[in-house]
Image (cartoon, rainbow, N blue to C red; front, side, top):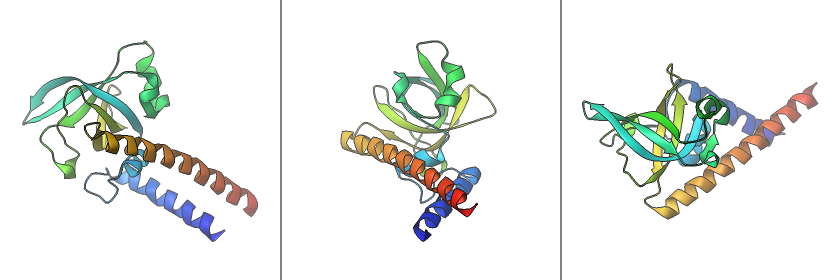
Length: 168
């Protein structure tokens, strides 16, 4: 039972951390942590860079297939009522700055992106540094780790409900 309680407390701590900050500049910089803390996780590629300000730019990201929405399908449904193309406005990008989640995007590359919603329902903010498919092995490992964290999350939620039920 102590083991279950530790997992529940860990989940609560991660949820509290999610409410107050981004993963950039923190110890939560691995793909699994970034995915857990983000509202939306997608695999997409750069479609277009939008006009820049002070070296920073927003980008239009293309999601090639529905299965590339790893997390946040319920948030994305209203945006993707039409079939194709699946395009999102995301920002900010530019010269790499790990503290502020800023990186350069390259055409013809796919990225795992960790996003949060904003007050503008058509614009999303980067919540963690994207993972590029430039190094195939890292990209594949990141996808695998992200899938594991969501399986673990389901187990923790199930255990949480079991504990609550057993306390009644």
